[in-house]
Amino acid sequence: MSIYETLGRIDAELALGHGAEPQRALTDLIRNMSRPVLEEWRVDLQARIDRFQPKRHLELQQLFDERTGVQPANDAGLTDAMVRERPAVAEDLYFQIDATDSNFKGALRTLGEKHIFQWATSYTQSLSHHFNCYLPLLQSELAGEAAHSIQRQLEEHTRAIFTQGYKYGQQRGLTQDILTQKSIGGLASLLDLPLDYYLQRASYSHTREETSSLRSLLSASIRGILRGYASLRLGDIDGATLLARFPNRWAYQLAFLSTDAIEDIVTQLPEGSLKVGLGTAALPLFDCLDSLMSRPRETYFPLPLFGQFSWEHRRLDVGVRSPSAWGSDRVIYARAHLAEAFVSERDLDDAAARRFAVVMAPLNRTSAARNAASCCDVVT
Image (tube, rainbow, N blue to C red; front, side, top):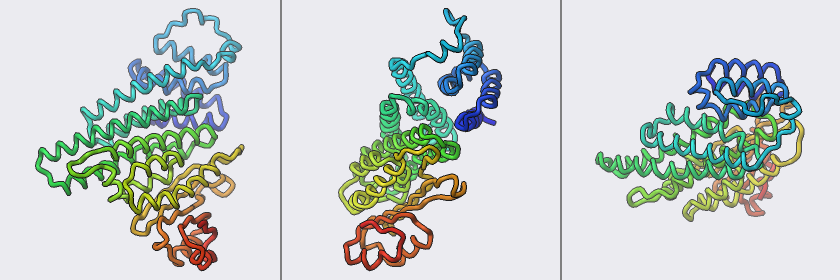
């Protein structure tokens, strides 16, 4: 089992309130890691250690300090009570964000210089590691700062690597059409990496803090990537125009994002039917979802688990995790139609047959009254 998978298992056990088993797993992990590997995963390991109750925290911290060579100057007599009373200091959080930001920036620079476009290997491994570092910060008092850091770094990196890729293709004599297809294909591959990470973590994220931080991380990542791409100049065409021309390659990602992230992405698009449709139907749908996710609950913390976009049919589908009492494989579906001309009675019958919870459509009163009986809920 990889380090990432082991930490995921530990997270899942801690989320269930367990202590002994995750402590054993983390103890074995720390003992079996070499000093360089411990240093590489220091932030991730420390974040898990800090989630334990005082006695277990003390035992794990002493082992971790011993294995990493930290000498406790005046802490030799640290007691359980002293551990319990340790305050969370804002300056420490700022330091962690600065350090994490610096590490992420260096990793992205290395990817751009040595592993550019190696999505399935180097990019997957590096992003997963650094996303693990950011998640605890996204559950802290400085979550907004952490999210902005992720967005900014990925925005700059996206702009840099796709500009570099385009220039390299020009030097090889590739046509504009081929360059465009390669560029938009690379964007789709890059966008899938944060989403894959999100979907893997979503399966064992069941607390308010976990679900909120995970969605914030994905929203910041996708927002940064799309903002960076939209600002590109690829010969006579810009990235924003390509986003509008090829929405099927990226717009399904909107199903997983927060409303503020979607609003920002929509503002990057050129004027046209895509921008109008997303603004009139998709944004109201995600306002509803955000409202649902922000309601105080003790056991049910919904997360989007499914997204599908069809420009040919002018619609965006989203699926949200259902309460556990409904069954682990149940998903609540909703749909946003982006243009009235593309909404038919057959579409609404299909949504009703598939038990969609909500359908948003820009219908006038006459067509809404004619079609309302065909679907569960039609919001006009």
